[in-house]
Amino acid sequence: MKHTLKIMIIPFLLMGIMTSCEDKLSDNSVFPDSIWPDTTKSTYAFDCWLRDSYVSPYNIEFRYQLQDESTDMSYNLVPAGFEQAQITAHCVKYLWLDVYQKQVSDPNFLKFYAPRIINILGCPAINAAQGTETLGVAEGGYKITLYNMNDMNEWLPKDGGKVNVAMMNKYIFHVMHHEFSHILHQAKSFPKEYEAISGGQYDAQNWQYMSDVDAYRMGFVTPYSRSEAHEDFVEVISSYITDSIGQWKERGFEFSEDNTHLIGFDENLDGTKIINQKIDMAKTWLLEKYGITLDSLRAEVQRRQDAMTYEIVMNN
Ligand SMILES: [Zn+2]
Image (cartoon, rainbow, N blue to C red; front, side, top):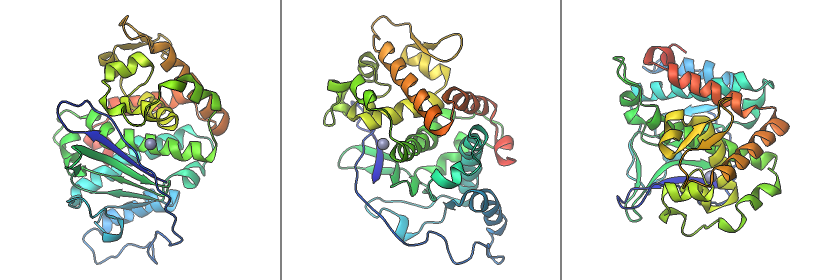
């Protein structure tokens, strides 16, 4: 199953995400014959770090060199720069791998469920004809492709400048938590009752024409959530984990004192009750099926986001 996450880039349309699915299975091994880095390459030290941080513990290949076979040739794409690749790899470890490894008691959880390949590219993937931008693509839980990584040094500046967590969430972590949640619900399905919460409100054809505020009013955390119940479910989990209190505030929500529920302070946002119902169901499902406490996962991500600097991430 292939998921393509997109946003509209036509100025008068509000942000949304879109998906398409196709079956794609391969028997081929994703790894080269040897996992031992080539000592003659200038990338040797980084390749050793990837072997020790991604391949050995989790059986994940972090693919940073552009390869024809793993590149969508319908886009004009460039590879990620070497420095940008290093920042991205450290960042994904700091804000994604290490978080799940810390929060899940089963030490083999990531080895079993994480995508086998994380593939990165340097520039955005623009769909000029449709006026959309592809943020990331996931193929059957096997490979996740992230775009626009050549801006990483601006989002996580070396000189101690302001860290742009929102852009990293947009291009990396919202995509990764979204796709990873798909992998998890494909392995252990979520309750049928979830689909009934917004039952008649889903609209696969017209979700992208809805504003963010209208989405909240109807009980969706993003316009794309309205496209279909499975997308709704993973958007709830991903937004809950990655988005800061400030981002929720901009949308018209505050967190309850115990930090576990949303409170809508705008009287027009009457979807709050529905969104909380969805969050509660996601929490119960993650705990019962995987032993994951969503609030702890969120707290760990938020703590790391608030603390992150270039030095912390690169020394991690
Ligand atoms: Zn999706």
